[in-house]
Structures are given as C-alpha cells and as structure tokens.
Length: 97
Image (tube, rainbow, N blue to C red; front, side, top):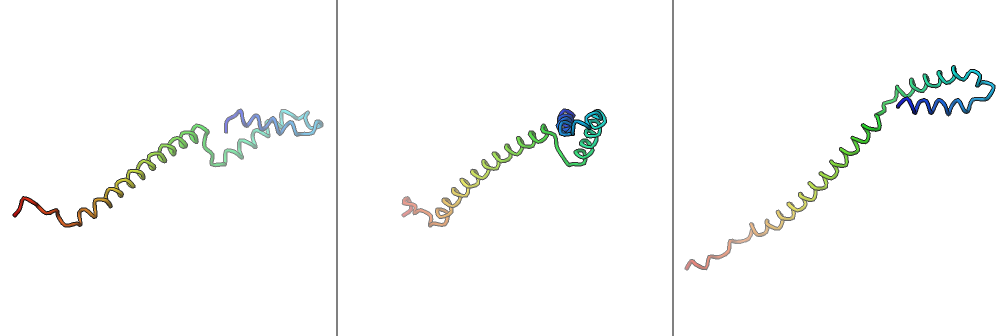
C-alpha cells in the first residue's frame, strides 16, 4: 500500500481521537503509521498496477479460449459431417462397363 494511503488512514484515525488527546498528535500519528505499515506489510497484497496487468492477461486468455472453443466446435461439426460420407459406399464409376 502506498505511503499516501497510509498517511490518509492515519489522518482519519487521528480525526477520531478525542480533542483532549490531540496534544499528543505527532506521537499518535507516527504510531498509527507504524502500526498500519506493519499490519499491511504482513498481508499478501499486490500493487494496483500488477492487478491491472494480470486482469489484462486474463482478458486476453479468455478471448483466446473463446476463439479456440469456436474453432474446435466448427472442426467437430465438419468432422461429423464428413464421417457419414466416408462410411458410405463409394460412388459407382459410370465409365466402367
């Protein structure tokens, strides 16, 4: 998580601290940041850029899969149409007599 978001979370937490404790603002703000960084650092998170890159890869993969499925369906259709013709008796040659 980037520093800006951690600072924003720390600021929001500080806003919720009672006014009597705000005299210790710098200490609290510093502690909030440290606790947030440590806690968030333990999580298995990815950056937004990496997430977006993987989303694009997945979209391309899905599109390719759909293309291959359509191709397979058409090949299966062509194969089943050719199968009865292959099993039928060969046409008689009218030139033979």
